[in-house]
Image 1 (cartoon, rainbow, N blue to C red):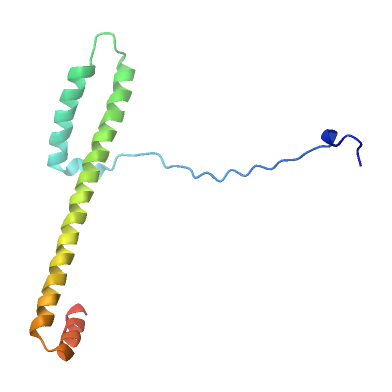
Image 2 (cartoon, rainbow, N blue to C red; image 1 turned 45 degrees about the vertical axis):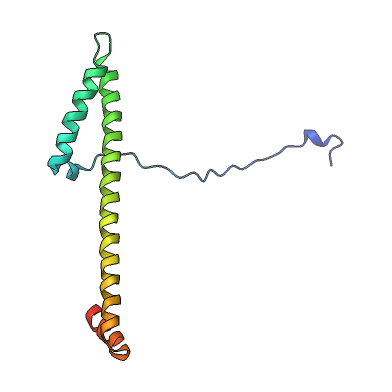
Length: 120
């Protein structure tokens, strides 16, 4: 035992459990969509109109353009995904509505049997 406890050695173990993020990469499939290509052309026109100056380094302009296009792509894909889910939800609601109508017209005992047959 030591008379001065603050002189005793101390060992700390630090376990870093942070998750590594994957690096963002462009999905080349998106380049096959004509709508996206047109949007990129328009956005690049606007970008260079406001950002290309005589004193701007090309490397800076290139890096800025990549970041800008990444943002445009993320927004485009988010809207596309939102539309896809909206369409899917509408189809689910339509199926539910048709099942409800079917339940009204069929006898209660037969309804569940027929729905099972249609779902398989």
